[in-house]
Image (cartoon, rainbow, N blue to C red):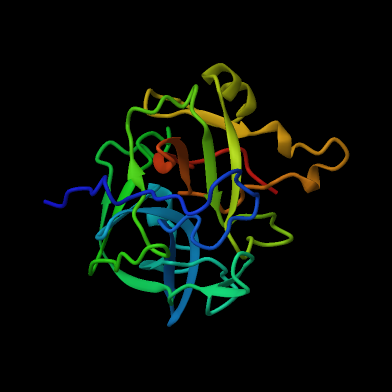
Length: 252
C-alpha cells in the first residue's frame, strides 16, 4: 500500500510573511478538479497532493455535478488565465517559468465511510489518480501531514482560488491568515445553519487584519474555496496540512 513521504514534502519556497496574493511555487501541492460535460472541461475547487497517486479534498467536491462529472485533477497550476505560468524574479534580471500543468485522469474516488451530508461530518475524500503525478519541485510537490497540530494555538493559513460572485474567482491563489474560534462562537456565527461540530472539526475566521471599517466589499471573500488546504508552518519552515475548508456562511 502507498506510504506518505514525510521527508520530501511541504517545502516552503519563500521566507517571511505570506502575501495575500500567493507567488509562483508557493503552494505546489494545490490541485484543481476538472469537470467534464459535452467535451468541455471546467476546473474548480481545491485539493492537496499528499502522495504521487492521491489528492485529498472534501466529499462535496467529488459529488459536485453542475459542470459535469469529475474526471481530472490538475497539478502545477498558478495563474488560471495563462497557459504558461511565469513570474519576474527580482534577484535575477528576468523571469522564471513553471513547467506545463499536469492534467491527470481520476481513477477512483474514496469517500470517508462515515460521511454524513446533513451534519457535514467526515467531509473528506481521497481522489486516486490514474497514473502517478510527476513530482517536479518546485512546481509540484506533496504537502506534509501532521495530525498533532492543535488548531487552537497554531498559525493557520488558507490558500485557494476564490472571490466574489460579481468579480469571479481569483486568477491566482489567494492566501489568508485565519484565527481559530470556539465551538460556541462558531454556533453564533453559523446561526440558521445545521452545524454539528464534532471532535475532528474546528472553526475559524479571517484574521482581523483583513477587516475594512469602511467597505466590507474590500474584505477577502472565500467563495469557491471548498476543499482548500488549511495549513500550518511551525515545523522547520515546512508546510503541514491540518485541515480542509469544508463549509461556512454563504458568500455573496
